[in-house]
Amino acid sequence: MGKRGTMEVLRVAGSVCRSWRKVATQEPVLWRRIDMSSHDYYRSDAFKLVDPARLAIDRSGGRLEEFAAAYFADDYLLRYLCDRTSILKKLNLISSGQLSAAAIAETAERQPLLEEIQISCGPFSKKLTEILGTACPHLKSFELYYTSYNMPPPDPDNEEEISNDDEAFGIAKAMHKLHHLQLIGNRLTNEGLTAILDGCPRLETLDIRGCFKVNIDADMYAAVCTLCQTENLLVSMIIKRMSSMLVMIRLESAVAIIMVLLIS
Image 1 (cartoon, rainbow, N blue to C red):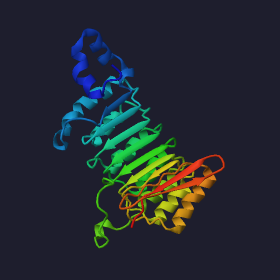
Image 2: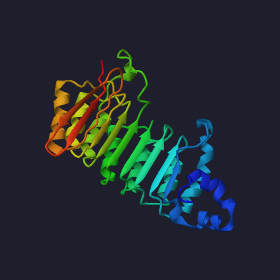
Image 3: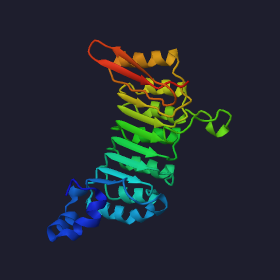
Image 4: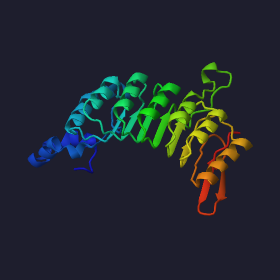
């Protein structure tokens, strides 16, 4: 039963037989990982999953370690989750535009064991990223999506699409132990990216698709090469637009690959 998805267990397991129903309702270990990010509900109907999500959280018996939700997570659900577990290690909130910064900050402060956070379309700022980094000292993976990476580049004449390094500076200041970082559709510039490279020396992967304000010039290229040579890491920088280039830098004890999709 552990190989079946959360939705399938909630809908079907209880009606198969008595033994399955007993396991589904009385075995907290089965609910250590709750993934409700893949479902057939349209965004306008996704709220119907709130009650099933609460039921799954209740069944975890305080042992919930991983939680993922798409389209329906709100402030009330996060507080409900935090009231019933304090050992969360992985949090994935997809299309979470209805969440407030205060609720995300409160969740981080109440879940100090978090190692992986993925949030798309959330209300982020420099202050909030600093709170996450400070409240979650074990954070190793952080993914922040603003838009799909294959969206067209921003209009430079549109004031709403101006550059903004707030989140980058917050990450650089408070998330020093990151191994993996994804910033999709972020408005950071070379200054913000440099701050991240300086402030996160343990980075192994860096994904900045759709970050069209970043210009991989000679200085930025040199900064990335320095990081690879100093830390002996694999750094994958991805900026998607028109053309691509693959650069191989061979080190004495490893091969560092820098993959850059150039902005032309």
